[in-house]
Length: 321
Image (cartoon, rainbow, N blue to C red; front, side, top):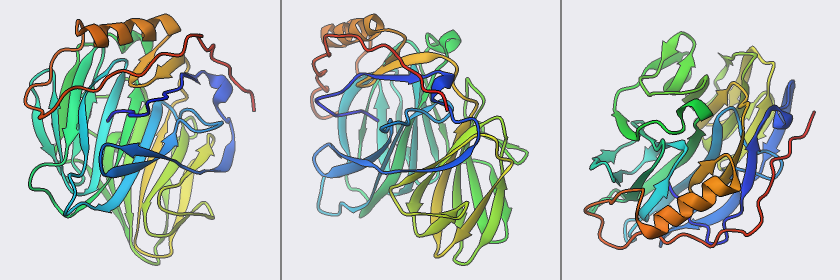
């Protein structure tokens, strides 16, 4: 997924100074961002005061949108480096193409996982014809320094582990949860799970006290540790929890995101993650010149131009809580 913001700001992220070492209940409101011709997303990360959750560094929630008479998602070829993209759908389909030659339709509750490593480009679009509704989330995972130059690759996992309890079905997207392990490749201790709750369910999900966590509401009305979380919002939970109480006031869909706090300080701008302003500037130059990120074949249209880069480097600043 691309960040299509033409005024992309440079964001310092990571480092333990941003991590809350105890349980908290911090409700994050989204920022609305247009995506292509007919889709608007609600951006939860990076957020004012909250840049990352473990290695999760970018979260967009979109839909459900009625795109029966619309083009739907149309994201031209664009570059990535230093991160993984996670495509996750509740309704609709997304056609993924990339500079490695991958061509894959991603459907609801199938994992589309692209590891950019040193450099990749891709496009995303609603197929023609396409389903009436489009609803999902797009997320990024920051790669640690030891793996940020890894060879780029794409994975599609249509079958994922499921964990069930009365009124709850959890689909494991990445990492480990309650003894299950996702087939998706990871480079840091992390977890991502899709939680489906039936109306009236009261239950709890086991957590790792060394991880920090957040919950994104996809649909319905649920209380997370006593806090009502409505669709398109996210509750940051901090660290130090061994379980998470959940109560569904209606049928509800949530995404549980967590991981070991990301130690390294990173710089995120547009669709790149680096370690310095110079990393970002070099990547932008190489996208403009066409010398690094390859070519996406088959997309009907041109590639995405790069925004102007802010002239002054921002230095990461942590905060201690």
